[in-house]
Length: 208
Image (cartoon, rainbow, N blue to C red; front, side, top):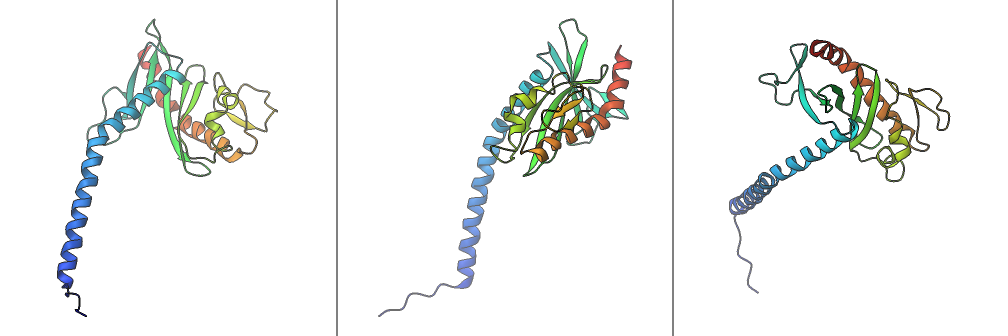
């Protein structure tokens, strides 16, 4: 019985290195080829969500946090600057701000967008952009129309209450069986309002 030819360790390492390099290059090529399409899809989804939470504004503009205020020009040297979206009606008047917020939920990060009228201090709507919450329970924060519609016209900041006990404009009925996820939504909105409120109100005064 003839023995199998011996392969040197160096040759094995070289072969594995070459195979790994080819696989890596293939992955990079696929990623670069699909990245523009992925980004375009996310941008389109974001624009649709802005339209939903601001009730179909005639147009909207992106405003960046810059030098202690809001500016249509992003700050120099910042890769991913903080931003909000200001919607305008047909008459050219502001109708509200759309704000994106993200934070951990029960399973994973929840990313949502909500509309906010800084003058009246009311919410205009809420939509979940990304979530991996438990199907049939936590995912109700985006699939339960009754829960989602409560944010349209609710007082801000919102306050969570036991399901069926809502009695004030700022109160939101929590989802039975998904309290953690629904509380995460309110925490996100509350934190974002705290962060942006001074800048939003100052910007409205400057532009009136």
